[in-house]
Length: 308
Image 1 (spheres, rainbow, N blue to C red):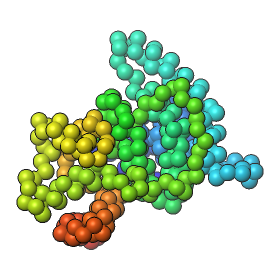
Image 2: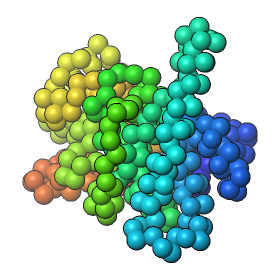
Image 3: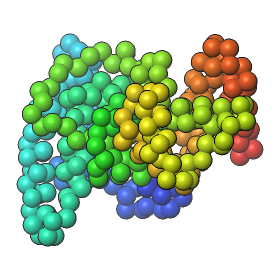
Image 4: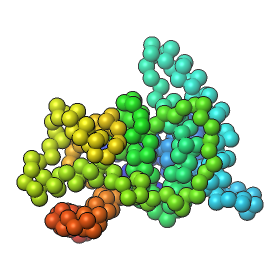
């Protein structure tokens, strides 16, 4: 079952038309929405589009003849027609730019992101399609985290990145001349949404927030943009992740809390993030920090019990 609130830009606000189109699962409706560019509304919708089309692909009577996992076969099948969709999207972008005196056609950005997703990052997509069979919400959050960690660190500041951060619910332009690599086995993809054994940017920020509490240092204050450049330099030096990606990460938390969540899926994802951080700190002997992380986890668990 797909939680349609995952595709709401503003949690709590009602989107009847959006939900009506997103719940369509028939072959005609899904393929029509695909070719009309509905699933290029944003990154979240692009994942939904692949999920809907994958469900239809699995009903293909010839699936029994596949000698590879269906998720990988679907991606190869999708690649075969994507060049046509990409060309149409670029033509529409050109016409839109002329008709609006230079405005950007946002759908072509998602289509370009999709070009990279099915080629350079097919492993992430395949894992999402497989895991979504059991838990769509968790698979969705994991895939979004993977896309953020694995794709955007190398990107310059652009419209797609900004939209991804605003969504969260929040992409990537790829070199259109890159060839499609073979799809590696999806079983090797780390479930945490980042490289195995490496902290995500959010985990680094949480770590520094907790360090300020244990060592009585200045509190990590992300509401002051004038400090972002220096902080990004520091975090870049520590983690090796690009300065621009750190700037975007810091801006993402300018008006919200590091431990903020809006849905049950986001709460579970935050607990998983904190649990991973606590395990590393505990094994390294930093038990005070681990204890603070454990306290945060208990607060999140208590929040769920209070709602029940």
